[in-house]
Length: 424
Image (cartoon, rainbow, N blue to C red; front, side, top):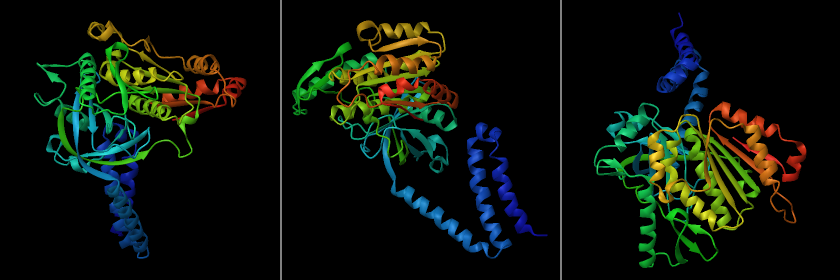
């Protein structure tokens, strides 16, 4: 009886069985561990069963070792700051010491070195999309929004929510975005008085009472929002970045960009929008119209992100050639608490460029409206319009709906705007 052959077969069988959707969806850790254990058993057993397989197994181990060395080169052991966002039921992670080296849409993998997330938390690498841009004007580092969905992310949220340690706690309750916006204005004035921002001409108060620095070029910038970045600290290994757009994809080369995201996909949306705005401020972009559509179950998810969104709107307000709008589609009834929170915001409501829509959007209508009636009506230069980019991040059904909306466009409309491309 060839025991070694049966062990090799068992290793392959383990990989095949635990790759079934029922295991992959219900227990990712079981799916993951079964793969590396089964693969290791197969590589060792096959060497005993077939002598010539030794060299192939050694080559495989060499490739695996090289892969880990490359990951180690792209890894950073650093201190991160955790801030709980109750309305989003998510944790905001800021890595202040990593400020450059990635593109919008890329992700990093996190390994936590703490027993709060389990005894073997250091052995688990979890991927999350970066929600900030590289080389941000205000020096902000990597920002991640981690939805509390699985065991690891729930423990992370609980660690960030420990009483007395969170930067968003005050008097037993969480500060709302009103507090952050007010603090932002105060911070800006203090820095101007201390002469820390000599590159700017003056400090101005933008729409909704948000402070902005007006630059000589007419652009605008905002500092890191107070209320964020002052919570629980934790040691982590940040590995990456990985993924992102194709090397030939230049978002700033398109006349307009429509970004559609669902749920936690807003991290992709925020980074793409901020990257587009940053390139315009650097005079390195053709972008003139930006549309962001966010589909969520509860509109209250918008509240924790209002400081970030408001800062983006204020930067755009100082760029006459660019327009940015945000539409939030929600599928759950509006709660009285959300309505009450809106009244506490500066101005008594949402910024004018943010609109709330009940129900799921009809993407055939949305895409046609954005391309035919918005982009197509922009003033044309000597080279005409340079195309529309439609980016999407979310469930497969969402991506399929957006793709169908783009496919339904008339060929004549496509030619008039310079073409339409999809980034998924």
